[in-house]
Image (cartoon, helix red, strand yellow):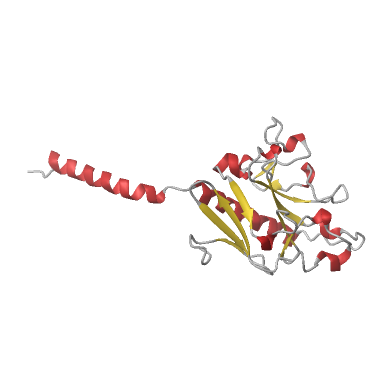
Length: 231
């Protein structure tokens, strides 16, 4: 005689699976703020990588340091008025500090896309344009519902939300186009070097997540919920 489950046993198994699903599934669901933080962290590290492999030093250019690789956070009409960022090296137009299309890093996974979520100055950098050459993913408002992106005071010079890296990966703050003087000395003014941990906080109405960038090394990580240490 073959053994088989009775109907009541099958019902019990289905009920148990349902209870486990209710308990487990919410724990594995992702949070859009977490997803945004993971993406931003990877792009901060990529900007640092570009700076390490592409030293902009030029003995014949007194303002060579203005051309370093940087990540700039903006919130403008071209970025749909939400937190967005762009990775670029300001190599043309006398290095004013603003990016144009050819200065923005290419998406390493798709060379037809630029690493920007919307930037002013060029119709092709306007996220609302049909000819947009950037990536919607870098617009944290449209892609992840991020309502605000704030940098700690240690990351900013006169309110500028930009971080760039030197050839050793050291993080420096401020808008390069407004840096004074020229040469190596001015490039490392103490007011520009990040001296303390830099924190970038992403927020929506339900959750905050912070990314830390350390001085000197430029090491970056996502903080634990209590902001006590890196994950």
